[in-house]
Amino acid sequence: MNMVLIVTMVVLFLVVLGIFTTYVEYKKRKLYYPSSVAYRTFLARGVDSVSVGFALYLGLYTLGRGLWLLPGLITLFAGNIYLIFYLLGKEGK
Amino acid sequence: MRRFLLVILILLQVVIIWEIYATVKDADFELDFARIFDGGGVVMNLSNVKHEEPFNQSFQAAKQVRLEGFVGDVDIVYADTSDIIFEGKKFLSHTTLVMEAFDSTHIEYKIVNGTAILRWEKPRMFGGTIGFTGVVTVPRSVERLDVEVELGKVVSKGGRNSLSIRANLGDVRVDGHEGSVVINADLGAVRLKDVHPGDVLRIDADLGEIDYSGSLATNTDIRASLGSVTLRLPEDTWTNIDASVDLGSLNSDFPFTNYWQSGSKTRIDGVLGKHRPHAPNGKLTIRANLGSVNIRKVAMW
Image (tube, rainbow over all chains, first blue to last red; front, side, top):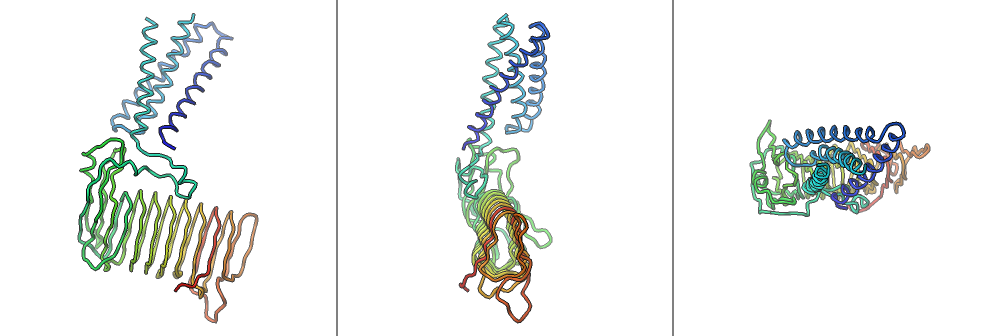
């Protein structure tokens, strides 16, 4: 089986899992705090992850292109989802 | 403003996904499940050859020769010559053609303490594979030959020396060899036929079966982590044996002494062969973690 297909399946699975767990966490937080506070948590997490991911990506890119770029890219990917979730939530309000 | 930011982030997400895809695709290796279940193992992809050129080079040999870090299928033959001769193809296997990396790959040659060392020098940080596939002719006068192949099959025919082969990914096959043999195979089957080792015969295979046909050495040591072991020995075999299998069967056509079983573990720690007036010759050690051990009697010498 092709490695590209395996990674695609893993990434898709993680995306679905990430969205689901983020949503569950948002619902849980909303029980104790107002929605705006709950959303702000995702903003903080998103900015954190995007910063770390971008730093990792830039740092590892000095070695050239290769599989070692994945940690940075995946962290960037997860952080971006948080930010999109934050903005979508704000839009919905 | 928020909508604009949202569009930007979604576009960024698409770019990241594409980048992840491109990075993995550039890495250019694949899991071949068919070969894993066939006893082959994880293989890097050598089929996606983007470029190949004839590769013919020769180097002055020494009494001891070592080939290091080679990639590709290597056939070792012996001839009455004073040089080590490489005849075959140099190839590049990758999703893209990187001629700079291809051209910079070469054989580094040096002689250290009477040993001719030939190293396949590859560019670092290159996602693809650049290798040599072909025939390596070694002088018959070479007393010791060490071969290390990182990826690819190794075949040696008609050697009369002390042979050591290390294969990380790929099968090992030795035919008609006379002299000590040491083989380490991480992933891949080990097949030896018509081998008459001198003092030492050592075979270590992590994943992949061992199929040996020939006489035993004074010290024979065979270890298999995952995979069956089949030994085809001459009828007159008479040796000390210490064989154990953690999980699997242990079968022998020869009579043997001191057989015992404890749980899933089977062990023979005694003598193998038809009783003779003289003391048994040498020692045969077999260790198999998972897989059967079969000792067959053959009349072919």
